[in-house]
Length: 225
Image (cartoon, rainbow, N blue to C red):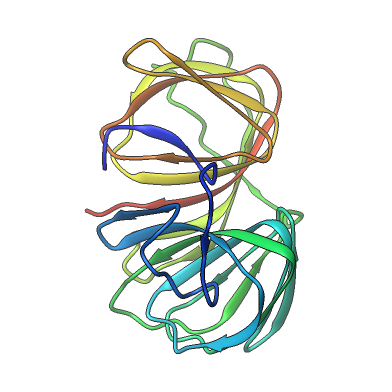
């Protein structure tokens, strides 16, 4: 499915045996080597070695992951597990999560906690050729990147700004942590998203951007080419 922007996690989640087991039903979206799933978890178990790089974003409850290190994720927190990781997990308090899995050839076992407080570096903002407002100050942190460079995970923040329509040539899952944004689409409809929501943008889609206050997001990108 390409050329569109949509909210993710609004349908009933798939109820599965673990955060890395999918039965093909419920709120699951597949894009070649990228699979995104909205899962409801209960109990505990073990998984591995994982066949994919897996990013887990907890949207409700608590999820504990224990591998080369132990991390406990509460609502709004996230971690990346590299391909080849063995992990024990425990889900509590009606746990739900968004799981984005990329299936590369390379192994990279281990668990990386995505710390939203980690220092970010200044990054290039939108091109001045598309800006409709002053150039915003932007900051970015890449926490994980696959060896082939196609899959990345990290944080980004920016001051308020607006820009003209830009076409995407990659997939992006964005979990808004702070602020609100309005994306204007080709059909002239407005797509508004607020903190706590998850959006999926696919290649071929195009949108304007308007944010009236600072915005912060956790991003997962996948560039097939």
